Length: 421
Image 1 (cartoon, one colour):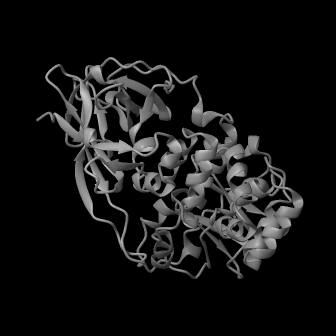
Image 2 (cartoon, helix red, strand yellow):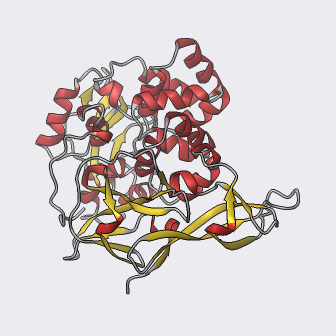
């Protein structure tokens, strides 16, 4: 059943469908326009469609809003979204703003707001879900909540800066790192940096790996050396090395001095290689086992939640030591091959020795051809003495083959309204 009153924060991430039931995208935000009198009027929704393109869907083209989904009339303008001056994004700009209640009971911050459809089919802001300032010194204390009609409050400020970065982070808490990176790119530069600084170290590391180089540098430059070292330590070594290669040499060395010695040594080694070589692209933390390890032991390593999917596709077998730089490289065992053997099978008996490892100076043009020719998602990299020094994965190669502005690329293939998103 279609709702006539919905809370905007609950719409974030909802699927957007055409009349035939085909998914065309997901809701990112709702836009409202202030009026001289009365509550703001909802003008439309910011929707992400295929290829991460953000488009504007006017509220007049929304035929139904129900739990978990938004139905449109199927007519979607595929031009990239551009925010107009009189429009304000609810999630990105309004949530977290301070208001004063007209009854004299004090102030509160907006945690959510509802939009309601009138008899003439317009959607306007109706109720606000508010939170009072916290009382008490405890860091766990939270203020009381209440509902108030829009007309019963007065905004203390009407600028994007009045929304706390913490409130915006809470709204985006369920987004995957790649989607959060896209959301940050939509914000003004100063606002993007404010929000990034409020992320915890692990979340910020994940997001930095998804951001373009220029934004990575802008954010890391705003962090003090100690926090920058913590965040870079949590990033994939190849991504951290690429980022640090673009920092001033003195800053880079100061950060390296604050990092774990082993991690710092890995980064120094990676930074010595050319950007488009196997050495410059590789990660130094693949899954490495001995030939005597069993399928069960290898599968246990693959199951770890922190292992990226591309790295979990294979384990690499070497002589000791079993951390890069390892002993002599012996071969690799693909995940699918392990599934065909009993848990007690030794990896040394099921090695793939036909896949030639890469040299540290192998150029990216050869790497992507090898991955494509043999339908692989990762390739080992060895030094001149045949010691395993890292692994190049398909996502490492894709990041460098795509154009620099691929995250905001306008030249996407046109999509018919109604095509699955």
